[in-house]
Structure formats: structure tokens, C-alpha cells
Length: 82
Image 1 (spheres, rainbow, N blue to C red):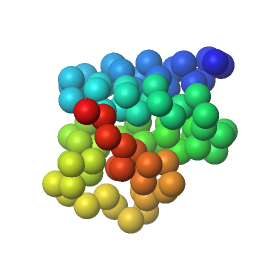
Image 2: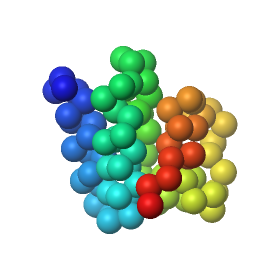
Image 3: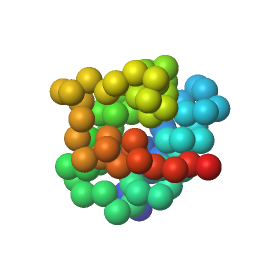
Image 4: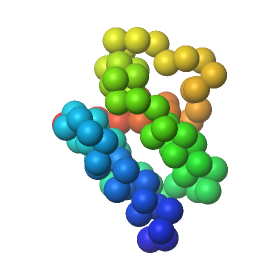
């Protein structure tokens, strides 16, 4: 696995809140190794958002801003981490 993929997986497991560590870490473990370069860039952009925003979008507490929707985010929103 290349350095960029490892970096994204590490960042996914070390978010600062346990809930987001579990959600994003399990997502990264499952999908990052198979992502294309453009999907990796999209996932890196997702990781740049705050834990509260991501958590609210994932749980449906708040709608995802339209300009942020992309195939990787849709995949994350449908990911079952439990």
C-alpha cells in the first residue's frame, strides 16, 4: 500500500472522537485500498471536514451540502460500521 493510502487510513482512525474513529476507520480499512487516484482525492477532501459535521451528515441529523456530494461521500453515507 502506498504512503498516501496509509496516511488516509491513519487519519481515518485518529480523528479525535471515538465515534468518527470507528466510522471512518472501518470505512477506510474496507475501501481505501481499492480507491482510484480521484477517489483518494475525494476521500482526502472528506477528511478535511470537522467530526461534528461528518457525524451529522452520516447520521442524517443534517443534510450534506449539495456541493460536497460525490460518489465517495455517497459510499461513506451508506457504509455500515457496526
